[in-house]
Amino acid sequence: MHKLRAAVAGAWLAALISLTLGGAVAGAAKPVKLDRATTPHVAVDSSGRAYIVSSEQTSPSDALHYCRLSPGANACSASKVITDPSRTIDGGGYAFPLGGGRVLLLDSRCCVHYNDKFLYTSTDGGKTFGTAVQIGSNDLNGSGIAGGALYVPAGAFAPTYEPEQILTINGPQTIGSTFQATGTTGPASAAGFGISEGEAGGALTFSGSIARSGHVVMAAYTDEGENVRLRYWSGGSDINTTGGWLGQSEPRHASIYSDAQLAGGPHGIYLAYNKGGSGHEHWVLERVSGSFLGPTKLSPTTTGFGALAADSKGRIHFIWRDGQGRLRYRHTKKLGTLGLSKPETLLGSGNRSFANLDHAVNGGRGWATWNDGSPSHVFAFPFKAR
Image (cartoon, rainbow, N blue to C red; front, side):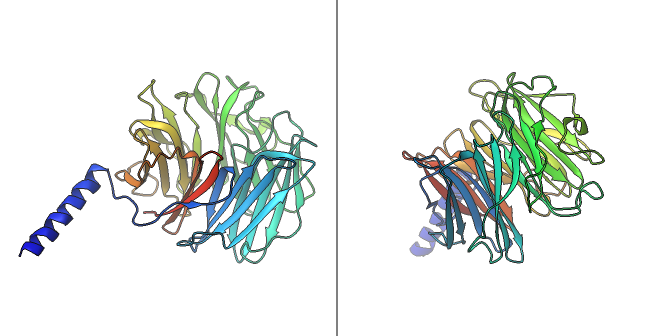
């Protein structure tokens, strides 16, 4: 009887702690420490493997680090380091696991031109890659892909664009966010353009993000007045010219920590941004394509770092570093809505900064990545998505 009472009391106490933390800390999983690098970007395939690309600025040549990481593993099952003595990293890189063993690895370099994009292709699931093919060259001052990169399959923009495309955007620069759409087979395609050029507040931008829902592509950036601005392309014109893009007239006022982010799928495109006065910063969520929905509060007080993602079904997932230094997670409960789950705690603070936070979700499996420490290393953390 005493053992039973002790077991019940222990279970009750564990439940109370879980509720106090706002959700259960994620099992026995621990962050996996990877390369000495920064600004990781992650993608997840249908089997739950993570494909992580990060950047190391070093002498004599900047290095792009690639790692394929399986759930439960504490080391990469495949890796690659790319260096180029004639060029520096320009916004990092991205991986695109496409199924059927095909994985694309994108590397952006400066400054033979301000932004030369190289694509490596794997046909064995990301174990090995072939030689580089240059697919982009964008000689706009300050251009790169620091904002984001998006793969678009062939025929998605038909009849305007039949081949598969890679869309890229930059954010932190003095001439405004730059956008470019390229093919995947080379040679280097049409130059990109300043997507915020000519727009109010577009001279100086601090973030850039892109997302797609069907044939609609949307871009977001934050201007020097701390306003989030949106532009969209819906086909029928050249995607690589500013004249083909329309603007949404009503900006959203953000906080100094805002890193406006978009995520899209079959149920529309969603926007997350940080807003609020000093000491009261928090994230909000809107649906900005399809029927407008929002804004709704995504998080309580934060330290600024957050990451928005959509899975293949269009469910929206969000992780962030809260005011207590914990990594938190929530998602939309029904497709195409703004109804949100209760926040869950993925990781306690542990003196982690969660700098350059990113995440991706596929088939109920999620991976979060960030960089931490001095010297900085990349960390990857698997979690159960809903």
